[in-house]
Image 1 (cartoon, rainbow, N blue to C red):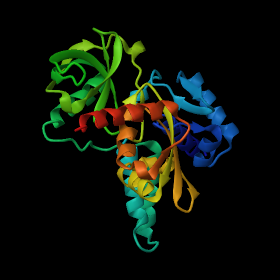
Image 2 (image 1 turned 135 degrees about the horizontal axis):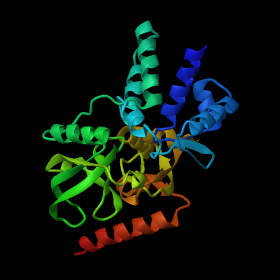
Image 3 (image 1 turned 60 degrees about the horizontal axis):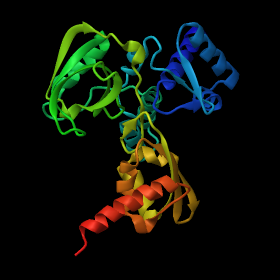
Length: 302
């Protein structure tokens, strides 16, 4: 009985660290227990020193909680990788015992966001290794020859790295010189040097949200689209995690409603299929698209 209780508590803690947040009812359904018992577990986490936040009826474990980074570093697959694997397993013919075992293992991976070794591009392996070590040991690092996309400058940056984004292409760091949390692209780091200096600003470490288009930020912008069949199929194929935010509107259309960190990612998708997509309930996004289209029109004027 105690072992079963501990397993549920561990699963709940893992779910509270995911990029997606859950209500008490959703947590109870996933854990096969009542919402009241889930609430009791959450209160027990608070008494143990964990910082549990609530936003729009959804609960999540704050990154300032003790051992947060140790918990999140246990993952084996990104959410998107796990989702693609799930669909691959579901496509296997029949209902064999091996298929059921694979599904059971994958559901644990997907629930817990357990990521394995990162598949890194050529030349990035050492940098990723040192970044993980720096996070684990709570050390400052130097990004030698970092290529900034904002200033187009190449410089050395002293930072405190504390969290990778779910797709592992970027890393959240606190930069003491600017006093800000910033997102750095791993591919733009020339070399990582881990310093002997420990973190000095952990209380200011705060990461952000990653949307289905792989953009990360501390901002969230609501969008709502009505998709034709071609657009819906392409969205699900190119961005598998988007499918959980899609619901059928009629036989030939789907509604896609979610939050994005910035408009650039979803705008690129929309502008490529404008005849098959309607933007709903978003004057700001419409204005963004109009500005982009005007710039394109100005460039192609004869």
